[in-house]
Structure formats: C-alpha cells, structure tokens
Length: 284
Image: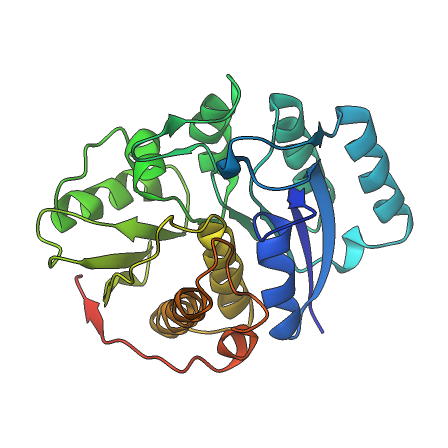
C-alpha cells in the first residue's frame, strides 16, 4: 500500500481541500496522511464561515511529529492544495526537502478562478510562479491559474497547448488543465487537457451538467484522483480517462442529489470504477 502525504485545507462541513481529496484516494487503496492548513466550519463560497488558518508553528509541529514516526521515509507522494499563507508555502518546500529525493510533488496551485480573480493572500501567487514551478512534478491548475503561471492568455485549445509548453520549460513534467472552456470548445461542454513533457498532449471533452451554484472542491478531487492514477503506474492517457470519468460521475450524483456540496459518498464507487468513459483526443 502506498502512502500519500496531503497538505491542504479542511472543513467540518462539505467537501473541499482534504475533505475532497482524502476519501477518494482511500477508496482507491491509498493510505493518506492528512495535514490541515486551515480548519473552517465550511468552505468560503458560502460567504461566511468560522475557524482559523493554522499558524506556522502548529503545522511544523504536526509535520515534525510525523517525521518522528517515520512517515516521511515511507511517503510515496506529496499532494498539496490550498495553503492559506506564505509561511505554509515555505513549510511545503521544507517538507519536500525532507522526503526521499524521488518523491513526486503533485501541486494544485490554488490561487483563484475565472470571474473571481485571486482569493489567496499576497505572496502565494508569487510562490507558485517563482518557486513551485521549478520543483513540482505534476501541476493541476484551472484556467485562471494556468494563464497566470504561464503568462499567456488562453482563448483557444492551441493557446492552452502553448501555455503548457511554457510550464514544461520550467521543469514540470505533467500538467492537468482541469477546466478549459475556449473559443473552440463546443457549446455547453468543458474540456480537461493533460500534457506530458515526454508523453504528448491529450484532451477529453464532456457535456457540462447544470449545477447551480457550481459546487466547490471539484478541483481538489480532480487533482487527487489524477495523482492516484499516476502513482498507480497508469499512462497519461489512462489517468486522464479515468479521472474525467470519475469526476463526471461525481457531478452526475451531485446533480441528482440537488445539493450544493459534492455528493462524495454517493459517488464513491466511481472513484474506483468510473461508469463513464469519454473519448481521448491526442493533440500532439
């Protein structure tokens, strides 16, 4: 059994951050060690919440305790999402330095979204652009984050491919662009694009289900599933296909439930054996 160290946010109610990542990975057969960067009552999309961003000392103490238990020595991957502060970003890098040299870092560069702009504290976008790109193995940005990190405006699929090449040149081996709606995307559809520095570029397009308001946490779940498939030795093609099938199944269950929160429990079998499979188109 492989072990994934996941450093992300946590909510008591709902499914974002570690709440959206840990359970799917566990259903896939991974042992997940979860370190929370924040603990909120609910995600911030509701407009009000209670709880705290954990301080640097608290998180360092938790990680030091894990190191004492030998967790770092047996860690097979580091998965990160919402950090909360620049100090936590530094902790992530310090932790990576203490893991085995070959440990992949799957980095979800949570910073903002189209229509909302940046929603993280000053310094965090700079961290992702100036530090994380040079160290991450896998990057899973949304469209807004991809444009910022690459410095490119993405209006077409070709623009997205060019942006991926910019990111690859920084050292990132694999990119999953989790939400691509471009001028050439079919109406009422959305694409997910996977780009491997040495494996080419692939895209899957699916219908957009009517989810209003759109549930938070889907990006966190997508990054976790993609990480799980890659860590299991799946090819880029297979990892993309299975991730998209699982997320579509999750959205479908969420739509059926009529809830604002992701229907994680109802969709749990889709994390292991996706019911849906969409064609993969190779772009390069």
